[in-house]
Length: 302
Image (cartoon, rainbow, N blue to C red; front, side, top):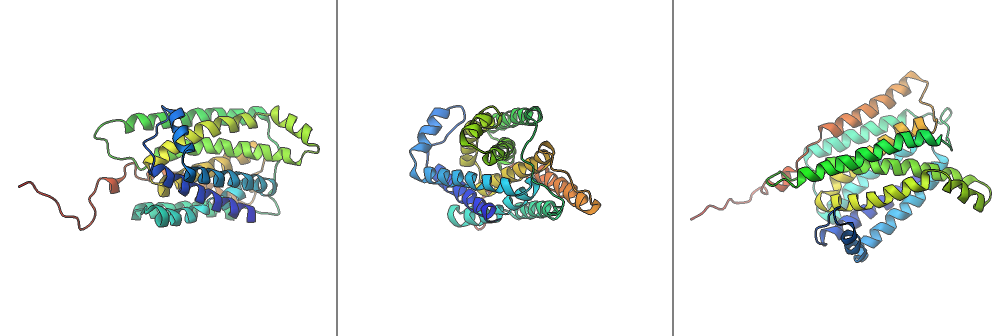
């Protein structure tokens, strides 16, 4: 629990610092990854945010060794509250009423997933068949890259309303979901006896290569999306997709059984369905970027 709460804090601080750094940088694009890296690596504030995210990754490894996947995701998503508070305080981002209701519904949905857990019956699995992991991860990576590219093409259309970032958040969330499964897989090798043997076994698995792919593509894609959209919206969407992806597919892939009790099973399925329906109903365009502030006077030509 302590490691999960620490990971939440580090991830929230890291995203907010990166967003603040990106706000002062020239526009970045996934079509120019070298330029993007050069710009962000020249920002001390961005480097500080990245170090916080990396430390959160270390805390996440500890969590996956001691908690079932679904339980871990339920705790991780509680960090959304801290993220929204930090975004309002440090970035000046305000969420709309509809978005606040959506975030509340997401928290309620993932609370239902947590309530479906039973520590007496739930087990922490440490291994998964490699073919099954690849069968889950490879199509998900392809879907995430395709969805992001589709959102990029629509965003380049002139006169198009500013996007809220929901599509970007879903795309990056799929990549981070694969990364989360890879982290779970890596954590299983931390219990192996002998450092040399554990490293060799890890290199024979698909996990380090999945982490390398998601790390490289996720870095470029997330920074471009984070610069264009509000962190208080895109990060919760990304986190929700990541948590649902990991909780559902990770539980099945690593053989952590679903609840046998009908009530707990209903809570888990209903929570998953609620979170997905909220994501599908969230606004695709950012009205706050196109509407004038309340009380602003309209200028008329002489």
